[in-house]
Length: 243
Image (cartoon, rainbow, N blue to C red; front, side, top):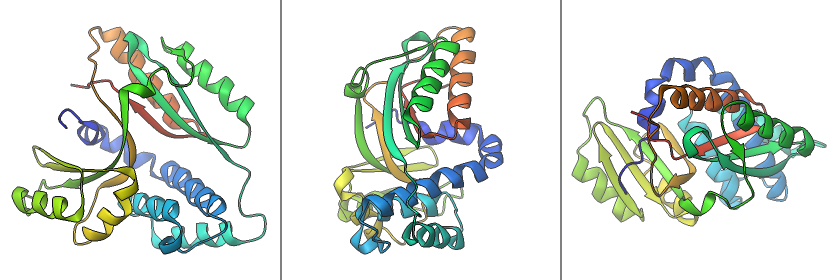
């Protein structure tokens, strides 16, 4: 499964990502609370698979254990499960780039208006459900940074396959392990000796699209930035092939 360059794209804006760490933790906290609520109030990840997935994501993002614990205590408390609902929006960015936006909101009218505004303002358009998701595959994605070259590629690949992974990709100093969504938690558990810099369920593009003009590139960057700054947005997936 070649071409999945998301982690390289993140690395290029690492400084900006670090500056947004608090915002990222807030989004993950919301996911933790919703995972407990939708899991019937169960705060034990061994008995709540969605919660286990979100905790893995939180740890890969270096969210402190105390923060995770507080979120779980809040979710278990009376009235702790805030009235959020998950809504996914699909559309096209500048140049026809396919975009999927996963949100959690307590006001669907506000969020729908914001999404339409973001797309319209930066050269895209909000589409109907299913308009682009057919061109993405839902996968568990585990990323290992081997920039220190401490790990052997073949060994990591064999460990991943034995752990139940669906695919493995080495791209420079980054190893990416793909799983079927239902196998994600088991693969993570089987690869506990490794440290992941990113670990979550993603929408992985089947094909990538280049933007040919500086105007479209600038608009796409602005669209991603404004989406990331929106408190209702949890994840943004797209098929823009960034150089």
